[in-house]
Length: 114
Figure (cartoon, rainbow, N blue to C red):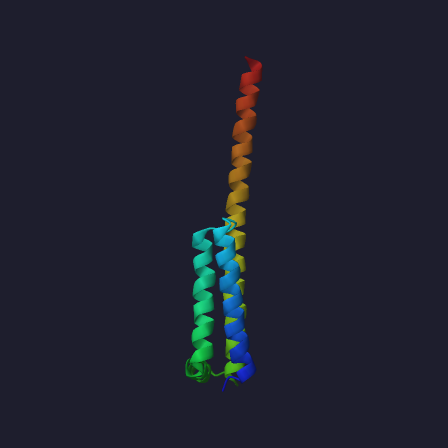
């Protein structure tokens, strides 16, 4: 069974995440597409906290010793997935910046030759 402190922590963390994401979206410091991930993640945490049977069933089915271990691992996996996604996006953007820099340099060089 999920301990009460973990259930409370999940709900408080989800509420804090929703408040932070809402504030960042309102100030246009985070894209709505990125905010969706955090809202869905917070909703999942609230579901797990309110209905611990879900976590217990999944933990048992996957062979975890306790539901808490399953929840912690799920959080770690989801965050690692998000970090990987962000790394891939950053790499794509760096490549694009390099490409644009080269185009600007060539354009400037051609302009200087005239």
